[in-house]
Image (tube, rainbow, N blue to C red; front, side, top):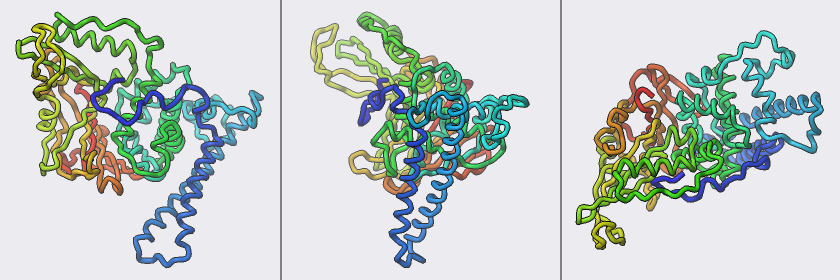
Length: 473
């Protein structure tokens, strides 16, 4: 998937689609034991000191709490593994000590019980197929008020997941496509397992937070730069996750080898349609269908001849001027994505054959169904965060910054449905979400979830990423 921005690595090379990348029950428990030892080590380091009344006391209290959470997680995963081993032994499929199934098979009995509305603790009814009221996963997910436990600086993961999970089109499309997948897809498998955890939690009105350990461990195993307990950027994580899902759920098995037709002597709309056709011949998934938009670049020679180029975007990254104290989202969008500049292409004009500076006009050629706007608060050169307030809107109309030659004007209105917020500095910050469910907004802050009301503040210093859905979509 090509994009307007650049990243540190090529997404598609992080894993191979085989069983080696699937987390085993033994690996899950071993990783959790490692996390537990890390927390115990921190606590033990301060056993010989009087920490009362010092900042360290809060840190130790936090580590003790996480230690207890890890102990509970170990117990739960031990139970899941035991149930899995029992099932394997009953069916005599293979010996557990010699073979381990991929994640989707390891948790197959657990999935089945969630799909059929059966509690995992109800061991006596495991083989009883009577009185099972099957509840579609999406019905128990979209209105979920389930929090996610923080596994050690994983608020950046929790925030992004909550925002994506509460979009109806995305969840419905994912579940529909996932059921038809036969390939080994580690991220999709672990994401589906996360959805089943949420579904179970809501089906039985537990109102508990859940532990996203399997998803987090799977993701970190595939992306080594996210390993450990360091803080990371939620925008970066979101791009990685969507690219992973795009790679795994790509419906193009044999990418087209045809060459793009020359855009010469074609209208801008014709050139753009050829570009989109070429992109979809290589990658076509629920991610390209929902999240991908397109930029258009028009180069106008001094002789008047026009040439075009295009590129995809997964989100709209908005730069923030350090000298500005307050921003308006509409003005930021105009300044970043509807602009004219003069560039020296270093090439001769296709019409007049002269080399000259060209007038470059940048616009949005096509808007996505789900629009992600990423405020670039962190300066990549200095590492400092811009804490200026940003005024944003619950309803957004982008007709003023689209390219009318490629984008229909009646598909430019959006409704805000989720927000990622960031407080603190780049090294000691924290992420949380505001999500609209029905007519009310709710705050999702790791394990804590609470109702805000029908209105939220639309001019804050904490807003970091905005999630919009196209009106009527």
